[in-house]
Length: 177
Length: 430
Image 1: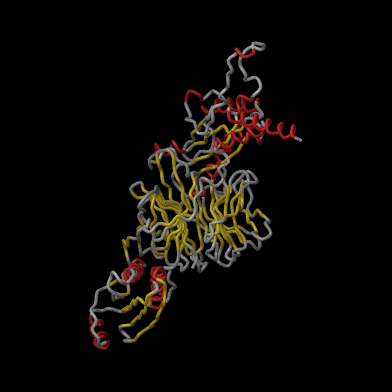
Image 2 (image 1 turned 135 degrees about the vertical axis):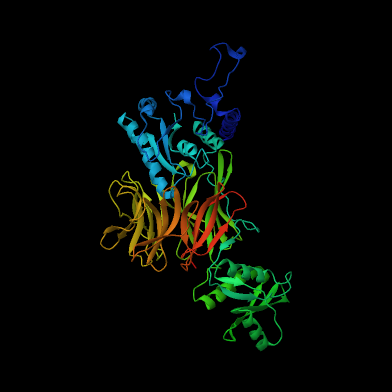
């Protein structure tokens, strides 16, 4: 009984030791140092993947790279993807098709004019336009989440053509890479 | 051990913060919305209100009643003098063309209680229309003042007053690229605003249940659209709908048993009706159009909704009995977000002409459309339960704020917000 108790205490202590040192040192393969060199080998610990909040700035230079978040603009009263965006969407589609665990959230948006819930429906059309291309390129429905924000999440707050143009967009955000 | 590591990681990234971003029931004592009458009617009733007591001792009752009646746009407040001789008073007041007089009294009776009496006089007929006495706790003074305003308003206009009703709305506080969204409820004069929900994610479409005890709303918590129903008194809420895609535009049936809403289960936004007791969900529109913004007729027999099935957004009516759909609006290239007036004979909606978005009224029998606002970027009209006033959102100097207009277009009020952008007002039932 005493041995069992001691074993449990030992196991729990080791367990807490691992937790305290960060979960990543527990990952197989992350331990550094050559085998067989014993106590003289320096121990490395990986810091793990960087956390992301899913809203990293969308950079134009990453348009043709995956998995990078993207933003696709739409013309006034238009719900079809612009021809210059198709290449970028295809790059993302290829990544998704090749990586079953990858998942994107498509957020459809409109400019500030008009009724809020009707704009949710219009934003949906813009998200769907990108989703349809992804699916045509072989991406599974389960890898795509669609949300329409209508005019609720403007990135430009003015009431002018320039701001309107910036807000008519579908954002493609990776929820899993 | 590995599983525990995963759980710790999840906690650290904040993905499992279910209640952390949400705050309930914070109370403020100053008004976020302040009414500013900008236009009244020509034939306003001329009324004098005598102070109920010394200003520091009347608990604000005189001011609240005065503002209520003044802001309805149907009363013109005038000053008058009074002598102990009532008969002589009537003669004097009539000479000043005063039509009605309110006098009252506030008495402190200890224990934090007040006795308040109020009298309403019809000057032209030289009689007392009513006299009432109330015993209340001091904290109820404002509420009683609104009740007295309702009584005076009804006695003199024949219409039920809305001074004891409330307005729900969404307040957006922006800080650079980030925003905080709050669902708030205030008295209809803008006072006593309280937060029902605060969220980092957008909130939309507040809709009062017919008994005024719950509010349905759309929330985008966790980057997903969902409809919740929240009990106002307790702050407890229930998830009503969280299908993939759109969950939007909740609208309660007049008997409170069903909610119409918009879902994209077919891939396109369609109107559905959810029975709250049986949880049965029925899709009531079909096709590839965008159908949204349902609202019930007062008799519960039909829904009006916005649809682009004819090309541009227009208002359509679905008769729930035979499922017939007919188009209701034929003027203008864009009509949306329509709601029935309490009589069921007219609708109020958002109407576009050129660059302007206006609030418009359409008489259903005559098919005649009238613009109620003539300037600015307006949206989200909501009708008061007495059918006399409409609250809506407007954009003035790039600030989102609320405004009110009477159903005949004659009374106009602005409610500038002290902080943030105010949008999507919803007028409570009585």
